[in-house]
Image (cartoon, rainbow, N blue to C red; front, side, top):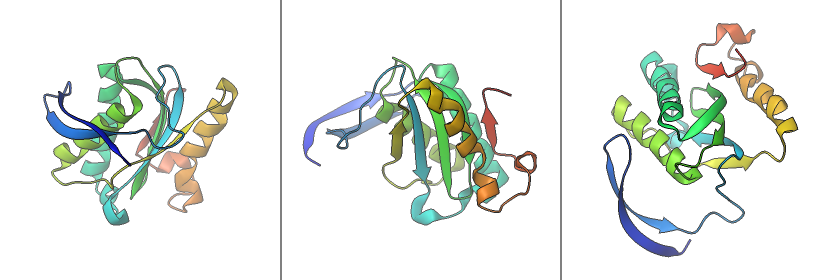
Length: 161
């Protein structure tokens, strides 16, 4: 990636960041109102979130970003070494800013750098894709063999509940 600009920015959590902006990953767009599925993976796939405190902090951070007005969360699933988050982006922050605030706050609250650099995102093409994608996200612990029923898993939520 080519560096475009360097600047300093403060977020609503009182943290100041100095970083260099880069071009959006090829094909990535940041649109208010767009629904995104974002996946963030822990550093070296370490299972930080088998620890209850760390997993709950990820859940709290997602809710705090909703309250901040960065997004509207449809659902999320915190797996032992990654997190899936389905949300509609609001106008206040870009996709990159929202994910950066999420990852930064989680790491500060837990006290270690939790996340690998970057993230994977997928923009949903239509509202009809929302519920099937949410079902896919929520079924992750079942597919991974962590539980036999989703009610046995603690670290998730969905707007429809």
